[in-house]
Each structure stands twice: as C-alpha cells, then as structure tokens.
Image 1: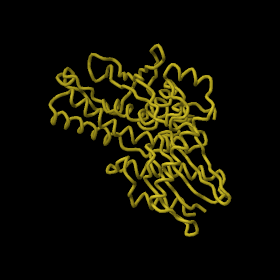
Image 2: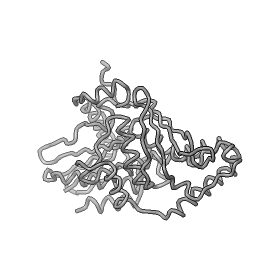
Image 3: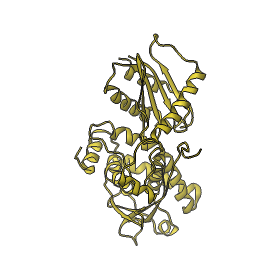
Image 4: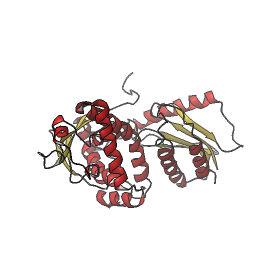
Length: 151
Length: 194
C-alpha cells in the first residue's frame, strides 16, 4: 500500500504531492514543504559520506568528473520506521521521487519509481506550458500517477 | 550487463521510442529554419536562436533519455567522466533519438574536448544550402548543439558545443561538432564549511 508520493525538484522545493490512503495521517501543506526541504538537504549530506573510487578521484582532480555528493550520486535510498518505509529515488538530473509506503514493498518499489520517472518525463516535461520551477498541475499526469500507483 | 553501448542504443531505438516519419521531421525543421531566416535576416542570429531552442529541448529531453534507458535491467551505468558521458551520448542517445551513431574522438590535455562526427544527419536529408546562405554563416543543424548543451547541463556538465564543419557547406566533407567541457557543476550543500 502506497500512502504518499512527493516530487522534489533540483532546487529542493516540492513540486507535487499526492495522498493515496485514508489511513495515514496527513500533513499540512506547510509541513510537506518543510519535509521536502529537509529530505533534500539530508540526502545531499548523506551522499557526501560515500567513498570515492580511485579512477573517479583521478578524474575529479583533472576536472572531468564531479565530486561524489553532488546531485545524482548516491545519498540515502530508504528511511525505515516501524510500520512504513520512506523510499527516495533520485534521477541523475536531481529530481527526487519520494514514496511513503508499507514495509512489505520490496524491490518492486524501484520499478514503480522508474515507471513514475517515465510518466513524469512524458506528461510533465513534454508539456510545452510546464515550467520546471513550478508546481505540477496537470490532470493527465494526475491520472497516470493514480493508475500507476493505485494497485 | 555485458552488452555494449551500441546494442543498448539499438534496443532503445527499436522498442522504447515512438517513431515519426522522416519527411515530417525534416520538413518541419526545414520550415522552422527558413522562417527564422525570414524573421531575423541575419544568419548569426538564426544560429543563436536555433541553439537556444535546442537548449530548451535538451533540458527536457535528458530526462526522457534517462527514464527510458534506466527502466531496463541492463541499464546504462552512471557515467563518471566526461569521456564516458560522450560515449553514451553518441552511442545510446543519438541512436535512440535520431537513429545515428556519430563517431567520438576525445582530445585535449585533460580529455575534456570531444569531436562528434556525424556520418549522416536526418535533418539534412533533403537540404541543399544556397551559396549565399552557406557564405552567410548559417549552421543549418545548430539546434543539435543546443540540445547537447542543455542535456549535459542538467547532469552537471557545462559544455560549449559548436559546429566545426557541415557537409551542407560545399567546401566541407564532414559534419563535425566540437564539444568542450567548461566545468563540472557542483551544486551541493557546502560540506567542508565549518
């Protein structure tokens, strides 16, 4: 069961929220914004903890590769609590998809995330009137997301 | 996981993307360029405008590319260097979107420069540049440079992309795009700061 979906853009602001279950406690809009900002920062910092391979280190010093820790490289993937897990999938371009779900979702959540990324690139980014900084208000995207996640 | 980039590109092109008729594609682009020439009456400005349009396409297209190549089990691994990114771009991305595989030649002291040789270019398909236009300095397919710049910027690589030669200009025998890495963008939270 998936409870909530959040999409956070490159700058760390929340561009999309959707609640699926009636059971979970809901946050207010403001709390969602704070949560999104916090996840964004924690994710970036956690990526800084990762070791860097030798090959990559050499490339970094020549300036032809990026340091680990910048967006799209590592960072936490799951936060686990007693009854639920918060999954975070970051695309190489730095968009984050956050799903709060029951614990019984295993690897399948990764496929769901990729499906979401596809839907996002098709129905959000290809809309000529969508501005990447703005919240996503698209009926067709809404429908596709519901179809994908409402199992 | 041992499949070559070429194969991944082929597969992406066959099964992941919708196709559009070549004539529609080439004519649409052609009329766009001609309209721009009429509007601006200056080839340098047309080049700039095409580049800008390409940039706006690129910053969106990169996600399309990534979403489609990461949804298979043999997805493309994360590129760690400029060189790797160029290989993937030429062999998978160009293949997927344009059904061509340009040759990649890396150069520069830090391997931070790349020459793409396009053996065929679908945009050129029915085009003959009038001598006046070629001499005026129009790079007919300049939109590609913009797409490359936009797409790479979204994965933290700031590059400069420009045409070096184009078969459409009667004096050139090859179509070459030069891509120069300017810097890797680091946009993270500053961790070292105390």
